[in-house]
Image (cartoon, rainbow, N blue to C red; front, side, top):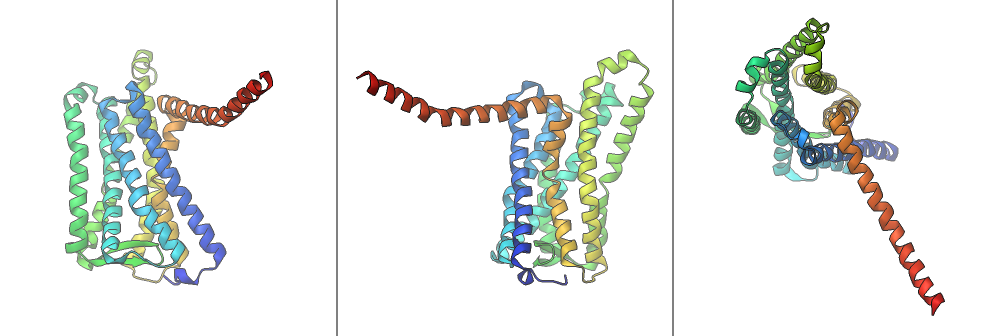
Length: 316
C-alpha cells in the first residue's frame, strides 16, 4: 500500500475509526438480537434456523475477536499486539469468513430440498444432520485456517492498507485460495435458481402457493441474505486477489474499503431479517419496546419517589 496509517491527519483517523466502530457495534448488537429472537420465539426454534444461528454466531465472533483489533490498529496507526495475536486475528478472520459463506451453502441446499424436493426434505435435513453439518464446517475451517497460516502460507503479517493481519500465501497455494474463495457461489446460485424456477412454475397453482407461502417467504429472505453477503464480498475478494496475484502497490483507501466491506457483511443479515421476516421483526420490536419501557420506568421512578416524599412532608 502506498500510504502508512501514521501519515493520516486527525480528521481521517477519527472518521475511519468511527465508521469501523459503528460497523462493529451494529454487527454485535444485530446478531445478538437474532439469537435472542430465536431463543424467545418457539416458531423460530425450528432445526433449519440452526444454520441462521451458526451464521449469527460467526458474525458475533467476528465483531468480538477481529474487529476490535482492527479498530485499535486504525486508532494507533500500527499493530500493537505482537506476533501471537496477529496470527490469532488472521486465522480467526479467515476461518469465520469461510464458515459464513459455506453456512450459506448449507442454507441454500436446505431451501432447495424444502421447495424443489419436498419429498426428500424430512429424510435428509433432520435435526441431527443439520447440527452435524454446521458443526463440521466450524471444525473443518478452523483446522484449515491454522494449516493455511502455518503450512500453506509463508507467515502472517500486519498490513497497513487493509488494517488487518493477513496470511501471506506462497504462489503455489494461490489456486487453492482462489478455489475456496469462489467455489461456494456455484451451489448457491444453482439452488436459488432452481427455487426461483419451482416457484414460477407453481405460480398459477393456488393450493401449492397457499401451502408453501411461508417457505417461499423464508427462501426469499435467505436469498436476500446471500445477495447482500456476495455483493459485499465479491469486490473485497477482487481487491484482495489483485493485491496477492499482481503484487502491485494499491492505494491504502482501496484496501481499507475491502476490509470495511468484509466487516459490513457481518451486520447486514439482522437488517434483512428485520425487514423481510415477520417473526424476526416482531421479536426485534418486542425487545426494543421492552428496553424502551424499562428505561422510561427507571427515569420516572426517582420522580415518583420524590413526589411521595414531598407528599408525606406536606401531610406532616
